[in-house]
Amino acid sequence: MKVKEVLSALEKFAPLPLQESWDNAGLQVGLTEAEVSGALLCLDVTEKIIDEAVSKGCNLVVSHHPLLFRGLKTISDLTDVQRTVMKAIEQKVCVVSMHTNMDNAQGGVNFRIAEKLGLKDVTFMSAKKVGDVECGSGVIGTLEEPMAADDFVLKVKKAFDVECALTNELLQRPVSRVAICGGAGDFLLDEAVAAGADAFITGEMHYHQYFGYEQKIQICVIGHYQSEQFTTEVFRDIIQKECPGVRTEIAKTCTNPIYYL
Ligand SMILES: [Zn+2]
Image 1 (cartoon, rainbow, N blue to C red):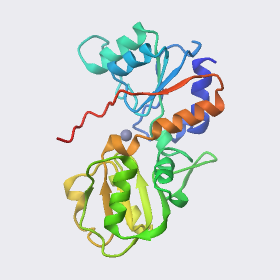
Image 2: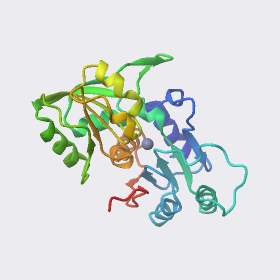
Image 3: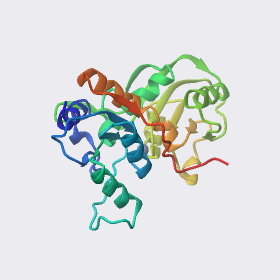
Image 4: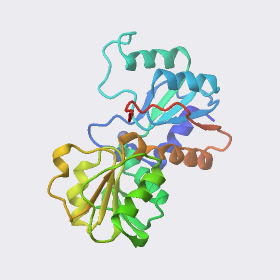
């Protein structure tokens, strides 16, 4: 199967028009007519990721975050992005990225997070239509059983394997409805409150945004990388279903640049 066929399977699931206006999802680097020898699935494309792809015999990297965001005027050894582009081309590795189009897609990043928490009746928090495709930036669903806020935070930490979560003061009522936006989802906090969510899970938020939500909603911030870690499983499932014969490997290289010490 060719790169362009895998790309089109991914885009069928998460059409590019679903991406935000500032984004650059889709093909990043490489030859679309190349036969795929294997696909390495990751969140970020770095030189180490290209090395891992080569060592595993994968000439395709599928990432969540685009390698190219702002465009390059120089391709040299001066920045990590430029070096990664050079290495991908030298090693004949093709790079495709499925970013906010995958965040916004039915069954995408946020639905997978909801699944990991065992939420039921999961829907877009506020669905919109792009063409005739329903999409949205966050999801909301209901826990199997309402639970105390401290138990809820523990459940989230366990599901995402994080040692700590940043929260506001513990909610004094049980948590039942949970709103989710992986990555930098702070822009959806008010929408989550308006949608009647008891808790809001996202990857990162600024200090000032925590103010004023005491006893309104349980904020639970688990780290950008950690919140999106299961995106590679979404990629794997799409490729396994739509591209039989294409080997998939979830990257072992952790590209999270943030350490908790
Ligand atoms: Zn992200």
